[in-house]
Length: 186
Image 1 (cartoon, one colour):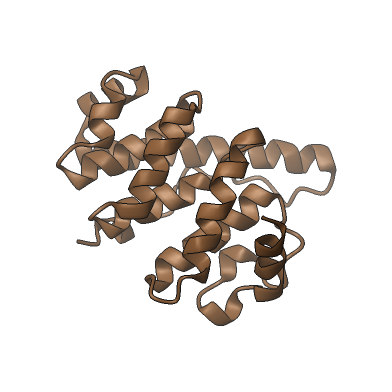
Image 2: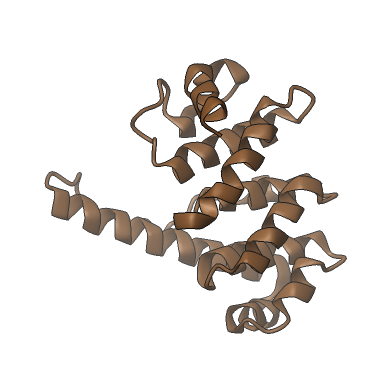
């Protein structure tokens, strides 16, 4: 199953000119984040229906949805849980569990991607997990690349890696020196 690749870029992205000042950039970034969230919610509504999305937004039965038999419901639940709810240790543990071992590759990929949004003291739990995925040669390439992107974002090193993480398409695009520096520090 590869239904995630059917997702189209959001048509709700801001159409303003290129930001030139820090304030313009911050406003643009906030607009992009709002458009991304709306696009994600729209996509989740297409996958599982408005009723399920509304239930998830309200936080009803979140844990049950994260363990649902339907992979599309797990996918929608992880998107909404990590984007719209206060991050708890329980939610982070569930996200790591899905990222580690979900049967559906798209769910795993989304959960790993969402780990890149973690901030503060919870990053200490995320970084070793992401490093293990990146360094695991037997892991799927897309999973490794998503883990790399998430590590770059969670570490705040977007401007420090040799090739922008979003452009990484092969293991050769990974800044291995930077990854090794993280491994040495953990």
